[in-house]
Image (cartoon, rainbow, N blue to C red; front, side):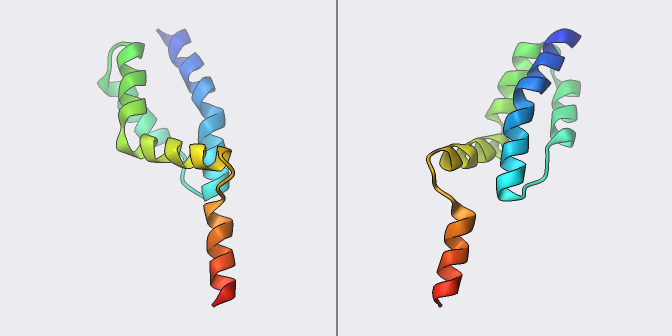
Length: 82
């Protein structure tokens, strides 16, 4: 189980860092630690982690970035036109 959890951490790391860098959001170590304590199997851990509302919002933000929508830049542009 330890090997699987380490692999899970590594697979999520790039996504978490990308979201944090682009949207200036905090990383999620506390949330991940909470899920490690709550779930016995890695499958349940991953399912709960991916289904949490905070993670879903951050994945949605990452998908928006991948589509080329740059929310932060758009906000700056709108403010400069006022």
